[in-house]
Image (tube, rainbow, N blue to C red; front, side, top):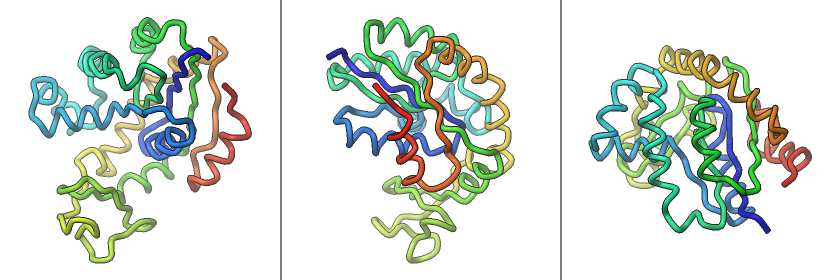
Length: 214
């Protein structure tokens, strides 16, 4: 069986990470999150992280060459030798072509989670993250037992700079502008599957099972 690679696409807040983690457990292959890798660089104040910081805080997409460097280094690890799920990359056709070279001769599929802007703004602007352990909460759906305090480690819950409503809307606009050609690129390659990302995780996973095939 050829190495399996699943590319997860969708706007910020569509649930790519949650869906990806669920599928990772189901299929037994690791997941790569470009967002997590980027945040690790930001937290560690690496050279790449410092370059990316100004783009993240203003709601702009991080430039191709910065993200590509992080992803290329990550994919050299042996943990990904038998396949992987990748979330948050590629975002442009140029990035897709770069990734194509790395995953040549693999069984590659693309899963696109579609969701409405208002739904995504509500989901992201009400998200809070523990600055200690990184656990994610939602003020409506997954609220902490004590307001502003993490249930796990007692750390302070914060709103990430890129989760403010004004920043979220700019992120969504930037995502649409850059990734519409990407969706068309994968559609032409006949490897694109689209599912509805508006709603609960269980509904999205059920739809994936009905529509997705390796």
